[in-house]
Image (cartoon, rainbow, N blue to C red):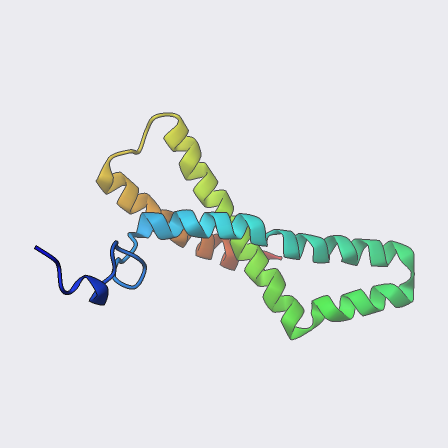
Amino acid sequence: MADVNRGNRPLSPHLQVYRLPLVAKISIMTRITGVALGAPALLIVWWFVAGAYSPEYFAVADGLLSSLLGKIVLIAGLWALWFHFANGIRHFVFDLGRGFELPTIAKTNWVVIGASVLLTALTLLLV
């Protein structure tokens, strides 16, 4: 028997009908933050190189990093660093063969998120 509604629905679950669990979102964010950490790292290296090159060039680099856009990029990079670090610690515990129970994974998802926000706030307050 032919399925007459086959053309009206997706053949497999996709992001429009399937809601990703938090652990999948954390995994995706870890990969994104790992790649995205390159941008603030390059800006900081550029700032140091500009400082060694000349006072005028340093003023340009410092002006960019001191602007609102520069501060947003650096704060986002700081959060990405702490997020990537916290999830790396969690995966180190996984590599030891611990924490694979579903309730533990659910708790550590929120620990990673909370730790990244808390450590970012503490860094901004203390520096």
